[in-house]
Image (cartoon, rainbow, N blue to C red; front, side, top):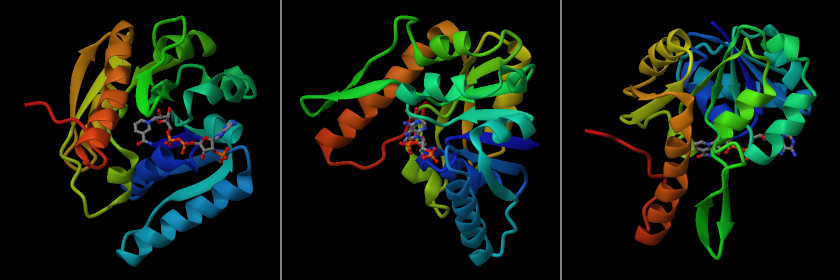
Length: 219
Ligand SMILES: NC(=O)c1ccc[n+]([C@@H]2O[C@H](COP(=O)([O-])OP(=O)(O)OC[C@H]3O[C@@H](n4cnc5c(N)ncnc54)[C@H](OP(=O)(O)O)[C@@H]3O)[C@@H](O)[C@H]2O)c1
């Protein structure tokens, strides 16, 4: 599958690319295509050292969406609206779009969930995309550094939400291909706020307990 990652040079974009570019074609997007090419080359080199052939290349955010069958929005929430406004909406038509986006801010040393008026990043992003785009939330609660350490088994739960049952099923299948991730159906997009808000919670717990890169495992 061709997977386009908007903001693909960032921590989550790189991490996902490292984990799946052995079996999918990954197209990293960036405001600066040279930066995306450099990141893609770095990913290919890391995989090569492990004897793995990675299929990963870099381009602009718009081309990453245009060429992809599935799109991941890997941007800080505050940059999503301006970035999506610069991409031809037609390129999103009928495509599955994954949002791992968690709107949060640091206040007095503590991370707070700061959703927009729509109630969650997911509901705000849904309004920014054409109606035929099939928005699914996933990967909101896995720390980027866990993705990047290829020796680390990702034995975590991935809560997936969407209003599109078929798109949700496809994303759950994609999630279950990666390490030992366990996708769970968390419901419709309306409940994405609950999933998004768990990440500032885990970061605060990690800070207060001197733990690192907490992610969620449900049993
Ligand atoms: N980090 C985590 O552990 C983690 C875990 C779960 C979920 N998430 C969520 O995943 C999303 C991505 O997180 P991340 O940590 O990967 O983000 P990040 O590394 O801070 O940023 C991702 C990319 O956003 C682009 N960007 C930065 N400023 C921008 C601007 N002003 N306008 C347009 N693009 C800009 C940059 O790409 P270019 O400079 O190449 O354009 C950057 O590489 C976030 O919404 C976060 O809440 C993160």
